[in-house]
Image: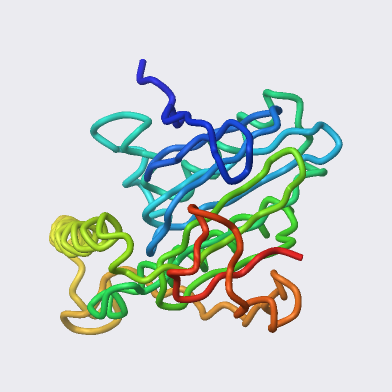
Length: 266
């Protein structure tokens, strides 16, 4: 049985003066301890979910929205499946419930989904991730109390599960070269995955003797139906007055002044 993809990179955070855990892509972490969970996002999304009454919370970090059966057929078990939003969200919620949380008390804050590379706008990975996490939480009746999604900057996110506070720093891409490398790999993998899905779809069309117009609606077009556009969701004022969003940061080494824009939750 595959090991659960729980983040293991523990450290002591000098800024927050408490133990911390750094989440890498495809990981999650839940806790009832007074600690900080930190991750860096490009087009990926992190959901921070808390049960204030139970005093527990957790964070995940996923790379792709749910793509149907892809997650179920992940070749490398749980860690590989965590790439997909549906699995990552289910894993986080289930572990919080096991730890004593109640679904009806959960509150979520969601971050990421940026188009940090010029070419990524054509793939819409960040937009798709953002739409997915909003849709998933709405379906699960988990209220989103704050969000900072999409845009063009990578983000560093720090979540305090005990209090529910989240701090976000917008980064320049040059500050996080690992994000740029990861985004380029994701773009390449995304193109390969799309080609593979298209090949499978064409094989199914041939198998059932359907022509292009019946299978996809357009000759040579995408055989998968396009989702109806989602209604615009009102953006939440996440970090208080706009003046605070642009003032010089005093957060210390982890959230210093060399950033594109620093924002702090009110």
